Image (cartoon, rainbow, N blue to C red; front, side, top):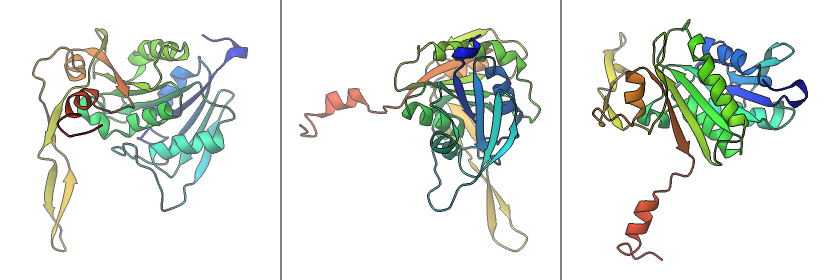
Length: 259
């Protein structure tokens, strides 16, 4: 635990909305390490990735305040919450950005859709150590307390300056009462199938609900985050902002006549 005079500022957001149990549980886990400010959407905005609001105003409202935790709601996207917090809410630069705890995992290629990880990536873009935390539990009253020791270990790791510049962490926990431990993994690969469910509207025409089934293309590869959570581990995947394919660059210069 950090001493009073050393207390860092920790910014927290999510994509399930400020009322979600996960973000409130995460704030309680983080408060022993620093002063906590939560800026989260006013309603669920899952799947927002790094979307921003550019054609309408965004509003923010203080919901609750204690000695160590302030909670704000924001009418924008998860990334809007982070941007607005940095520009208009936090009294000093945060030492850490946390996202979650998300109700539902964000493993494998789903990191690209994830508002939870959009928050972590935005924090990383701003030069702040950032971690996104998700659980395979999806229910509104999901039990997250068994994640506490893992979250605390990761917070210490980040506050101690051990995260490389330009890298954030994607943390995914299985839906179980006890974990086998924490496993460092690569991002799994796969594809969604049967993504839309069609219904007939009573006034005519069709409408669609997003649904789908995820199919991993990694088989039983023990290096992936999907394998880890399917076998009882908390999966920790480092995610880099720099998406440049350096291997392609080295091999394609000649064939593409590049300089």
